[in-house]
Length: 159
Image (cartoon, rainbow, N blue to C red; front, top):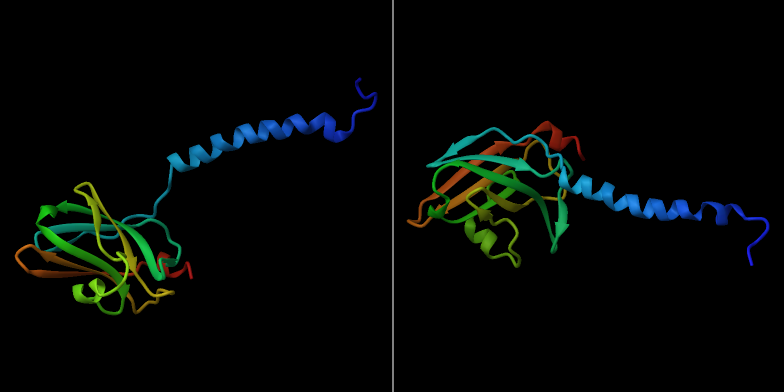
């Protein structure tokens, strides 16, 4: 038997169902159209021409007990199959390959394809003006190359 007087909850609860149906469409749109900050200037390091791009302007976050910041490195020149290993860190000095290898996790090492290399760059909890973005590359013949980028002001203002 139907109620003679419907409460506001009874009259409008179907709107909650509509909201539940619309929210996944909104989140799908957001995930398919991300906005990234601009890439840093392209630098030539040995045979490679590299442009790093941070995934966001937020500060470093903790990943498996280490503070890291995510980057996409685009290699515009050079054969990345000639790279034995490469690491990225944010700090006052570059980390040597042996320092990064002695750590527990895999953070800091570049991985990906010829279209782009992803890296969880090792960092301190806060990024300061004295820090730089460092990349250290070792080729298969044992040559070690080092590159440096200044920290953009937009990454500093996030703290």
